[in-house]
Length: 265
Image 1 (cartoon, one colour):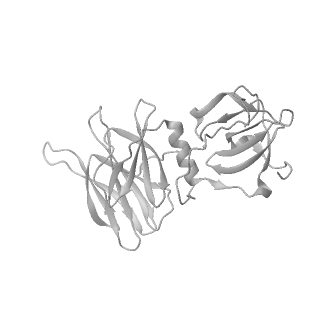
Image 2: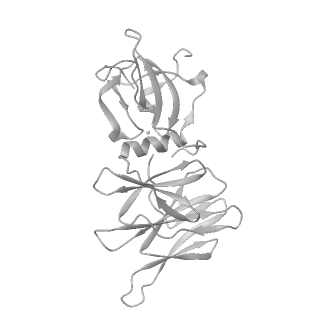
Image 3: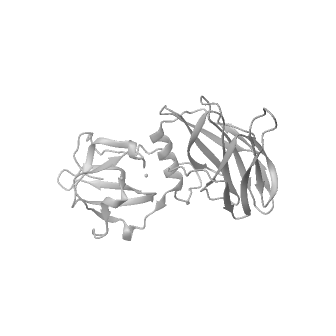
């Protein structure tokens, strides 16, 4: 995941725009947000965070200790894994993913805010029965994205005064991936923005930097020249103008289909 964040939450921008009605235009063009697997320990700028299993007492549920620099922060139900969120702040954020024994509701989450200094806050549990998807910034707040397993829905939870509040809008996976990318992409300087499509066959446009967000009828081909505006993960946010028709399109292309060597835009 990229680590640079904008100071505000950008609009979706349509991620695809057309100077005319070119929905069927055959041109050519490339994404997490990826969610890392949980670990039992992660490093932060303010010390290590780790989780330790607590033996079940009798028929009681399994629990996990959450510890910072060896000192206990609290406990959660289930076998907990840790994911450090790549968000830029004066604090570090670690998501605790507690795996529960219920096959119908396998996850429950807690967010840790570590730092600055010796400060540490552990949110109440949230996001029951969802799965991890991504994280972004909205102004000065951290937003955690959790997906509905088996459904194309992403729920967002914002850090507010030590707890997580669910936002009202439920997003598609492509909408959530685009919001995350727009808050964390890396701008490309104009001197490096010109790129040439390489490889074999069509390079497909995507509405968001996620493989499943590929557009079925919009692509570029090897040799096409375009402009890269931002990069995020394995994708580039690009603008392409058809030299024959003058029509333009923008969206996400896989970075491995682009090479330097195009004239400066």
